[in-house]
Image (cartoon, rainbow, N blue to C red; front, side, top):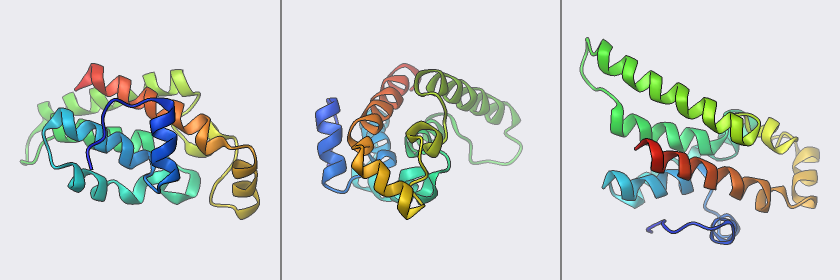
Amino acid sequence: MKIENLTDQSIADLFANGIDCSQIVMGYAANKLDINSDDALKVSAAFGGGMWCGRTCGCVSGALMALGLKYGYSEPNSAEQKNALLAKKTEFEQRFAAENGSVVCKEILGYDLSQPDQMAKIMEQNLLFTICPKAVASACRLLDEML
C-alpha cells in the first residue's frame, strides 16, 4: 500500500481502516526513502498510540525510524554518523513538540489511550480523527524538510 498526498481526511480514512499513526508516517517516508512500503507499514505497526500505552507518539516513532534509515549507521565505531543522527532526532523532536505540544501521545491527546475509561473519552470526543491527523501531517511535513 502506497501512502502519499496526505490530507486530514485521507489520514482519518487510514485511521478508520486500521492503519495507525506510526504506519502512516513510516509509509509516507517509504516513498522518499525508496523502500518497500509494505515492509515500512509492518515494521512500524507496533508503535501506534505511543506503543499502545500512551508513550512516545507513534508519529514520532515512525519519523525516527525514517530518520534512522536515512542517517543511521550499522558499523561499530561510527561516532560521527551517530552524532549526526542524534542531531536530526533532536531537531525533529523539538520541532514536532513545538507544533503539537509534546512528543508524548497521552500529552498530545490529553488522555491515556491504554486506560479503558480514558480511551472511551478519546473516542467520545473523536480525538483520533481530529488531533491525530494533524500530528501525522506535522510529522510528514517535517520529514519532507529533513529527509
